[in-house]
Image 1 (cartoon, rainbow, N blue to C red):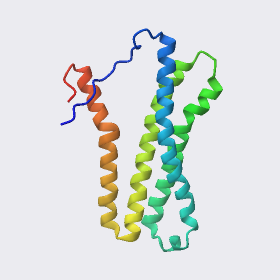
Image 2 (image 1 turned 120 degrees about the vertical axis):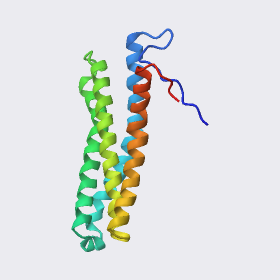
Image 3 (image 1 turned 90 degrees about the vertical axis):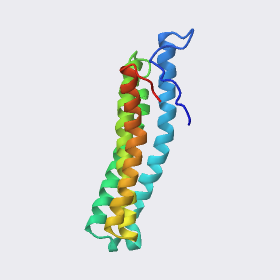
Image 4 (image 1 turned 30 degrees about the vertical axis):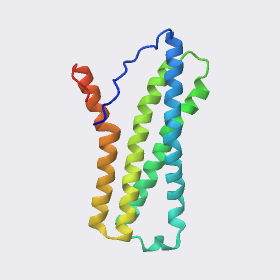
Length: 169
């Protein structure tokens, strides 16, 4: 069984100043967001083309709602993932980098939630259109559960265990 890496507390690396730590953490955060923003932008771009496809007129009311939820949540995820870079430009050299870092982390979590909703709705839309309504719920639910567990629940459990002084296995 693979053992998880130990949880790192928010502290400087050896020989690293507070400013260097904040710079490093912001750089790491922005690198992570670059990965997420690419995925959400591809999904968002695809969703923007869906209503113009010839078969979209055959999509029923449930499918249209799933499409709208997927589109709106992809747009919101895009906004959240792009926000830190836009704010970095506006707040550059203002001394607010640490505040921006904490805000970007919170907004990144909101973006991940939006992306999870968009992916869930997109899978459900395709399943509902291609197969039927009940498989749409099953496949959409599988995506929702996987993203909830891997992106949110598992890390929250690790945080809880770490705060309680327990083992993080």
